[in-house]
Image 1: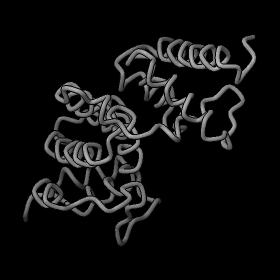
Image 2: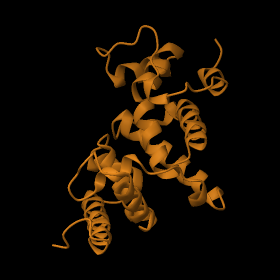
Image 3: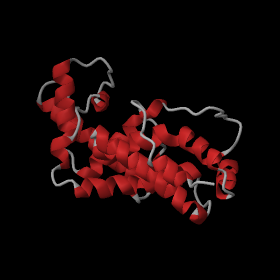
Image 4: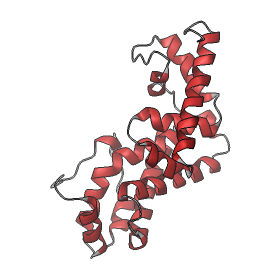
Length: 209
């Protein structure tokens, strides 16, 4: 039977990786059951895991890289590596958390390899929702200032904020991805939001208090 790693590695991601589904996908089978089947050589079981977690992986990678083409490539690479390492998955954490950790490490590796990755980053439109009032209807100018404020954060604060702001990950998952305690994650997110708010306050968009 051909390796699923080889077949996945040659398969292009769809236009919107967060919308990918596979025939026969079902929510009644647990990740642990699918992992067991995949370890036994069932490539369809691993395809189910890909379908189930690709959206979360893609968004995490995008938070680190913020360049769609690179994020798609890293997402694919993360699944290929997960397949190759599946025999070493001990179950100490949930499969999703283990997978997100692999993906985040690959994303950081790619980010470090891009000499000027920040110059290639896509606009942070979605991240603009972190404005103090939480409004999703901020005008274009405000959204631009919020994006600039987030861009000005240190990588540690920015990563924690974007992962938390996505709403896809719990603090425990973020902590495992960033390799820091949950308390540190919470502090970084709080500090990042504080700095964004302070910058917006200086521009007259929100109250300083």
